[in-house]
Image (cartoon, rainbow, N blue to C red; front, side, top):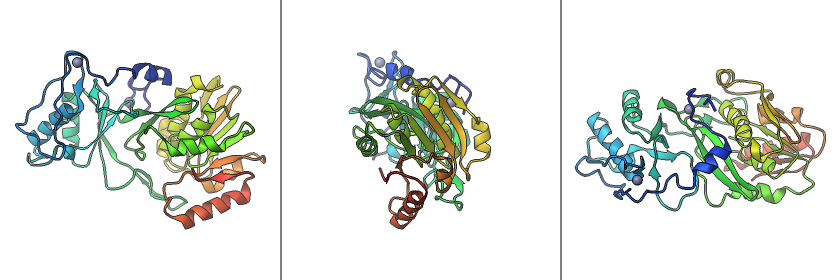
Length: 341
Ligand SMILES: [Zn+2]
Ligand SMILES: [Zn+2]
């Protein structure tokens, strides 16, 4: 499968990913790794090379990055190891032990890297898949409604597309996302939002709407449960695009014959914020799953006049006035229950 961001072969189906995870981050009998103090500077500017099996303990990978940052003058050598950045593992899933990383399994999110250093990290540290420069904000749209502006982190080198595996009671979902473009969500052993969707769905649920869908976690949870009609919507191009892509990735778990994309990644990137909901993908087959890019205030215009169960999963949960206004607006126009997962 071709990656829409880098054009290489860095994405796979849920089947490929789930087959790979059994031993992917486990050490071989020859692997050994030092556990380093993340709050202290790296001693002696030393790191070990990967094992003959191709894996290396995550702390050694961080030590390698640390040495490069010192050589490049971005670090004085007094910074704690953790300052290198935040590791996002591919594929990400709930792990009890820190991982031994194979090649191209780490997206590094760092506030301090420059373009040249990022290129060197990708070239010289085999475990690194991509390097993203972060900012002091959540990537995506700055707020709901027409006033929102796009803000993203910068992919400086490599590719920042990676998958996370989320368990549901019907089985796992594999969800890709582009890390510089969207908020970071860590897979946990227990996901309260997924559980709340599962509690709301009944055998009589015919329509499920994930009104602010992110990369499709809740809509695809409903689809994996077998809900016959699922609508996912997000105003942000990266969310809507990857929701559609993730239907395709997980299609073996769904009753769909085909996923039809109406927009390419490039077309969507050129118009990053949707206003009037526009259908960007839909399935053919027994289950109908549609993805829209648009403002959720107008989503009712594309929904059927029958009862729908709507999950409203907004970032700004602390803004209760906003949530109440949006919920009330939705209930005015749409039949059925709206819930905050
Ligand atoms: Zn890629
Ligand atoms: Zn090994």
